[in-house]
Length: 85
Image 1 (cartoon, one colour):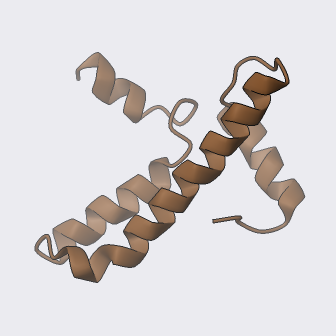
Image 2: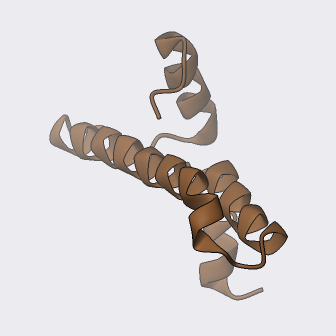
């Protein structure tokens, strides 16, 4: 597997892996009819926006790594009580 593909499949690097998989699965099941999968695309887009804002905030605060690990993300989401996206 190429390095780029391996990085995209790494849960520590890609915080929206489940949303990405869900949208791909929807496209496969609906013969690539984008209209039927718009809710999955929107959820993925909102996930990326949320984690990008977290990453920007962490960079501004000098926290490294800028993207929280999968365990840290679980803690952040648990503290929020619900999915923000």
